[in-house]
Image 1: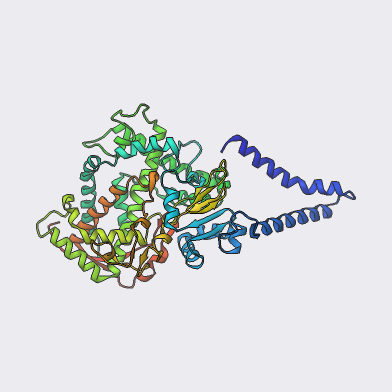
Image 2 (image 1 turned 135 degrees about the horizontal axis):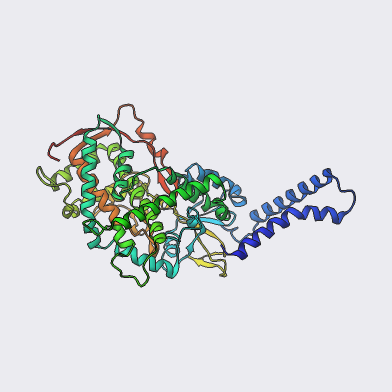
Amino acid sequence: MSACHVWMKVLTILLLATEPIALLIFIGGSFSPGRLLCAYATFWISLGLSITAYRLSPFHPLAEFPGPAVDKVTKLRGLWIASLGHQHRSFKKLHDKYGSYVRTGPNEISIIDVAAVTQILNTGGLDKGRSYESGRHSSIPPTIISLSGEAHTAKRRVWNRSMTSAALREYDTLIMNRASQLVSRLGDQDGRIDLVAWFDFFTLDLMDSVGDLKPFAMAKTASTIGSHIPWIIPTLHLFPHVGRIIQEFNDFGRGLAVRRIKQGAVHTKDLWYHLADEAGLEKEKPTLESSAADGIVAIVAASDTTASTLSSLMWFLMSNPELYQRVQVELDGVYPEGADPLDVSQHDQLVFLSACINETLRLHPPVPSIGTRCVPLNSSGRNIAGRFLPRGTSVYTPPYSLHRNPDYFFPHPDHFVPDRWLPGSNFEKHATSAFIPFSLGPANCVGQKLAKREILVAISILLKSFSLRFADGFDSEAWPGHIQDFFISTRGSLQVNLTRRHDHV
């Protein structure tokens, strides 16, 4: 935010605080505490009523979009729902009731019309909203998540090199080693485990990241708050507890960057090799601070989202034994007795498992709501899919709601039906253009190929090694209700029993 904008906000606050006093002086008469209190009450009540009337009136620029009256007036309800992690389910209920376009705030809408979503997210679409900045301390350089335009293109160029086919092959050894380690450690457990925790360990180990993970939760919550009341973003770091936790998170990423830069690439060109431009391909080498910021993004993008998908995939399979059996039969056919389940060259034969992964990403996208995009304030507004959006409008394009829209996936849009992804499937509606678990356009998830590779490796060796079922007494049906949307999703404990299938793995 520019200094001019900061001073404008300060001036506005001063005017709102002093206007009742000025009004009392203008009216004249005695200047008592009682009259002062009455002046403030009258002023604020009148101001609140006039704002409410305008936001509910047909004269508001977003008056044509339906939505709950309380959301048209204030963001407080939305903020409360988001703070509980229920934003994705709330959006779904609103879209079920009001349709593809819903007004979710005084100057905010949520859209699940695929034509509009494509236009918003693709090249030439809307800029990223300020919520993308909410977890970043002012001392930390902008990351690929928050950057737009040419700056994003330059940063994306570095990230793209880290995700080429050649680069992914360099990571295979690390992925296979960590997957083998996961199976080995699981084999040492006493039957009942929390699968969510072990998937978290697996994906964090892939980033060679161990330590206190409390900063992750606060960083997620800050992002959620910022998406609903972006004006608070510049002040988030002024709250001692919030500022300290976010700074700890950023320091954690910087520590990883420092450690990795000091030790250099070991035996392979890892992710840091590309992000720090150790090959010297960029005109300007990334700074330590920039590499540290990228490290924070890598931790979240390459660990939390993958662990989330792995957890949901296993929940869906264990909840549907016949589908679990189909995956097992496919794996046993592709990797017969004596074959190496870590052989990534066989992944293209795992057709049904890949369909299950896609269906998991459809129903439980790892980023359920995505951050807001914004119609630029310096524009005259934008026409999106035939509808006019005034300047300053914040726009959500929530994948969780879009993926369950019966206009694009039918029948059974809310059910786990992986066959819809198989070649030659004949579902009434199966619009892959409405499938955006990794977003789309120039700002889509650069690590999606790596994530799918990790998932295929982990599930292949896990199901070749063990038979899994829900633990006795575990309420498996309630598990999806514990998934929370804090920009990326968090999930509750997934208690399972596992028994070994093969001793050679």
